[in-house]
View (cartoon, rainbow, N blue to C red):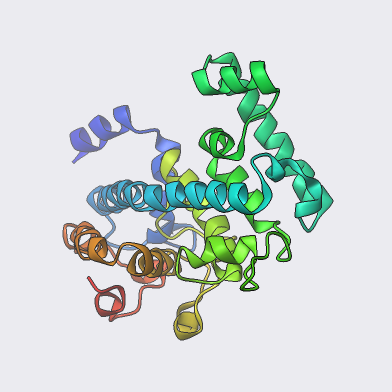
Length: 270
């Protein structure tokens, strides 16, 4: 249907749509029987899936901000996040700090009230204010570089493990999940293709899930499920159903390029 194709291409950049039909090619040409409708279904599924990802990742990001600020402030002090000695690698700290300072200065220039107040009065932001203007990527960089010996309490639990404990997991998993979900969040925010994408930053899976490790999309959904079942178990029932509905609305789309196992619904509890 040329009229349908032209109407869609007036709204959607050809180069954006081009990425979706790579899956439908064989040796550089379309597989026999491929239609524009097939390409459009792929795009529609991916658009809806990106919307779901944005919704699902947001509470995780906000909780990490909250726990990072709370534990840092109580264990180390309100401005200890700016102390390089609390981190493993100086170069990683420098990179995170440079990102943060750009974000802070941008917020100041935009007149964000609490940023202007703290910078004018104290010359810096306390951690509970700083996390609110950090990008998810910057926050992930700070957390992922924390020295495990920092902020150890009387029970022997350090700052990084205390933050991970709020998510019901260990530091090494939360560090990996936050790094991975930063990429996923940015894909959703910038309307990039998620379907059949090579995810170069792979999440570390729990031992029980290790058989599903890959460079594709199923591990992303699996770690989101693991986070929810530990933090907000009651909410996953609704979120999982919404995820399943995304796929059910587009039954023609092949999920195998995303490394979905045949029993993906039972694994994700959808």
